[in-house]
Length: 461
Image (cartoon, rainbow, N blue to C red):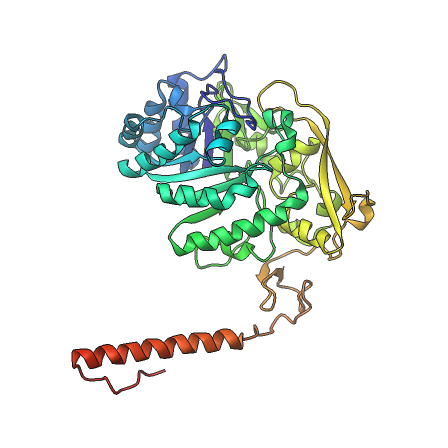
């Protein structure tokens, strides 16, 4: 069931982003007509879709985008918009709200100088920040989407401060992935071993945001597992974790020419189920069913092929791994993988060996190299997981807060028994008790000043 659909309704764009995977700019020659788009909306509603996010290019450069948005809302689906915001005026935002758009995510990829450099247009940063404020004023929940790469990584705390001050309510962060323009500008790509600092820094910002009602949402390319996973993957009180790529299962992507893909970011060469002019949404889903991560027969390669979490994770984000070697199943941008290797004095780097063609969603070719800390090449045989793959439910270890198989008696990460009670931090316990005692003293003092009864009575424990 295509629960969430991301739909590129035009490839026209008024920015010139150096990391754009779709190489957006000009309209596709054969973009769907208004009537064809409205038919697709009705098919998606019948298929059980709950949310459609309109993207481009720049979606609002298509003249009938409000008509499409209104039909999405009329059929009871949540309509969102992802935008670079250059030219997203308050009038356009008000028109979007009237049409039924209820969430708008604005791309902010750095502070002013860096953002304008990455987006290729001077002044685009100021327009994006202004749009966040206008979106909030109109009554739509404003969010921000940020590409994390070697240039933007050092600015993440400052971006956090800037967008929260502007009124953003959530922040989706994702890696700049080696596709399209980003292959041409590959120096901006993060090296896999840098994912440790990225995730640790984002986790700190996640907790800062939680305290002020601001949500940091790691995209599918960020993670996986490790000590931060229980916090940001859990959207409710239930503790959850990454459960594998949902491309073609609950997620679907559409291109402006009607191409139906298992994910909006993946190349049609491997992940298209047909075009809407010739096949229905239901037919496309059936065509894609054997290419989902649970049915494609991929057993993983390198560290992923040996990973303790493979049967749950199945190699993380398909997009991240496919663009490196034109096949999925080996994802070096994994927190668990990078931290495991780092403890052995190892790290991974990517090296470009082939450019990408000059076409949308084109991929080049990269080699994933295992190195020692001094930069010398290490044999791949020493870069595998030393914990055996496990099937079944994962639970949190009460001692180290890492995920472990519910079938194991001892945690493979710290060695503690599964039923071990978490150690009590006596220093923290004393500090909490002191705070409680202090609040009780203040309470009694207030009662004394007010002349109310109870001033001499201690509060029960």
